[in-house]
Image (cartoon, rainbow, N blue to C red; front, side):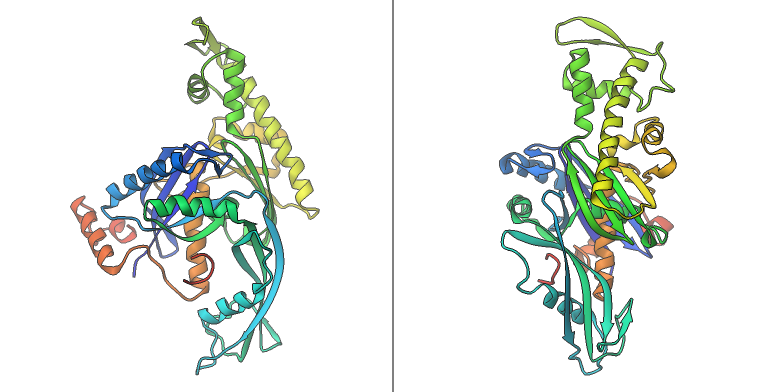
Length: 414
């Protein structure tokens, strides 16, 4: 069975959708779509009527590429008012073989949260931290291990129901089911994770359009997170205000002329624009980059302070992601705030080699990891649809025998 999944990231500036196949521990992109957001502010849905047609358009873009209707998706949610709690539960092994199976792990997790969730909150993730077999042996990977009983300790992530149900409601209107929901920061981590990060305590900073998310991970487990109401759009607003240009022109100036640090900027590199007063003005790269750098330093310093508020433990790594982190010379501004202690995220997957896709890409990797824990494989398409998808690929000359051809419910099961 081909493991094909779709993930959706609803951001302030754009809605991003990825369809990918996980094959031999690699994530291979089949389709990507991005559409300008409407009805979203700081990652939260404020107008479902404006957002719904945007979602429909985004899904259609991917469906036109792969030739199939997408009916199931994994979705990101922002970290506003996130709460964490420790939980513990156990269940007897009831199968005849007395071997731990995926369903036993799920049942143990279910018992760990039964009647413990405050009203108004919803579970978005349960991450096991330790398993115990038969009240004695602690084991890292219990699947297919002989036992009479399994116990699990977990960290449970909770967010307000209102943050989830607005998304589900919009997707239902276009006949798409939500199969799972994760915090954006979890997606960021899984797009970057490796064996080294899984052994350390660190922070991931995602500078989004409307907000900046600061998250702490302890050996791969999200333990704390905070949304700061400042982001890339503040850079655009600064440019717009200082030069008296439209928001559209401010964004274009940032992309075409601006640098994230003034060190390599040139005063002789200029661009002519007409401001809101109808005046033609020349904007030079050095002054523009000073404006951008100033705001980015403010954002990073706020994030730096927030890291110290979120954890008292020693931080071994800091990774910064988000679309604006790929501006030219961003690493210079990063170093000016954090020294050598922080790095710029790098996404390597072909088709989504941009940090703006980090959360969306990571959702697919995370969900696949979750299914492995349960001893299952999952695909959003049926076997017949997968055969149709293979046929679609053949029409565009991607042979099943070529390398490219080969590559190419919520927490609980419903």
